[in-house]
Amino acid sequence: MNVSTPNSTAAFIAPDWKLPSRGRVGMFGLIAAESAIFTIFVVAYLFYIGKSISGPSPKDVLSVPVFYTVCLLSSSLTIHLAVAALQKGRRRAFSAWWLATIALGVTFLFGTASEWHRLIYQEGLTISTNLFGTTYYSLVGLHAFHVVVGLTCLSLVMAFALLGWVTHEHVYRVDVLSLYWHFVDSVWVVVFTVVYVIGR
Image 1 (cartoon, rainbow, N blue to C red):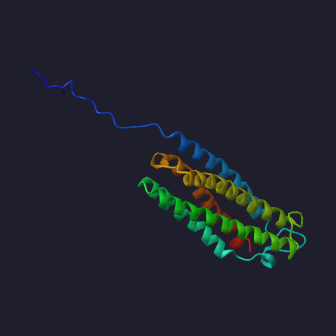
Image 2: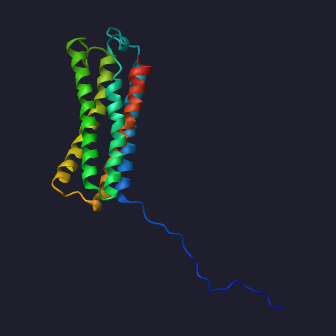
Image 3: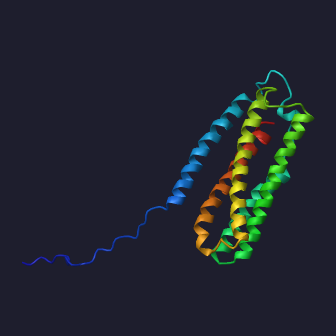
């Protein structure tokens, strides 16, 4: 009795699979490492809340930066629209949205600088005043440093765009850079919650 067997010549269709892009893997690796650093600073801030021997305390000197927070979070939308515009080859729209992202980031950084100026010169809170001052300036300063790095990179891309050097073929690189900016915005949600909601 003959037993039918599958056709040995049947083609085997392998699923499409590609190596992850090096740019994205590298950026996600950087984000993971930076997230670990931020976690340490956040835990330290939470641990030392209310343990300062002398004043001032957070509730005495901190004011909630609602406007500047809205500006920073809005920049995630503008940078997304910028990347989407470049994908469609709309270079002018890309430049406009990219510039809006920079403007929103600068506005946020101005808000941080203004708050620090008030805390130092009007409230007398410095990094060495008490545990609150040390952990506050360390955590918020770490985030501000990342904003500065992000704005520097965004400004370089803006300069290249104005020179006509950013085209549709650079979408991938611009998109990878936008991941860093989204990370900066996401971290601020955590910092804002810890410092201005839980910490007060």
